[in-house]
Length: 311
Image 1 (cartoon, rainbow, N blue to C red):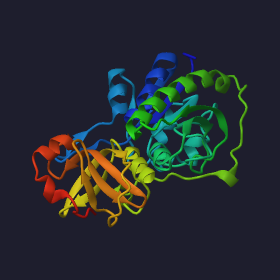
Image 2: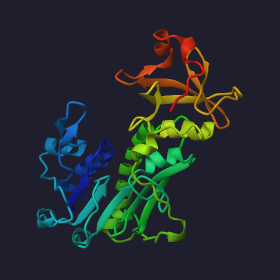
Image 3: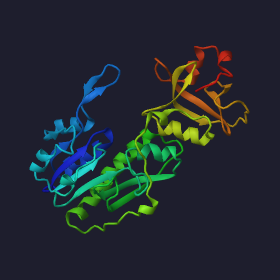
Image 4: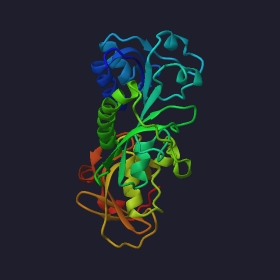
């Protein structure tokens, strides 16, 4: 595969294993990634993880603000194939139609389920028991192209968005490596997606981060782990934001108002939800670092916490 000229398009850490595999096994002649942007409270301008890898390997880098119109330099490289993985912009038809071997996407779901920008988060939030990776031909619509190959993994009850990201990023690079020969020699079987069962997992919005205590224990538990470690679920205590990183499902059959702190445990704070109690175990009060609830309780008056209303 070393003679195949590849342009790779990707941005976050999730894309890095795929890019590294392609650098080792093919001829990556260009990398397209999102522009550098301010990160964190101090607004320090930072490059994407994909750009960092490309720089280390002296690969030509393109960072169009709007790839819809800024793509000529990419086509001038005359790639045999373009491979995308979590790039972050919609690819125009002019690019999709150019390479002789097509434009291939590595998508972190079992298509046609969970099309869109947040398939890993939503799979956990929705309580799915399995997910996986799809290698697909791209078309003008979002994640709707023909499927080339798929691989499935279980979602563990202990998985978070972060742990699932890590698993699927490795799985994606391995599956692409196994699939590339059939793409190159044209022996793969293109499978059209069933539009009647397609679902969409749009990017996480600010309102999705707010814990809804009207939901069940398992739904709240899934929401919290599905947003860990980014962007992190939160609620409000005494008018201040309280991020909730980890929780567990309580056994206590309490009957308080929804969102009320019901019990203070040695290592957790119990909160009333629609069918019982969710217990926060790792939190981050506004302006402070992430901490175990056990440590948080050492610095506050426990009696004053009970019966407070969150939200």
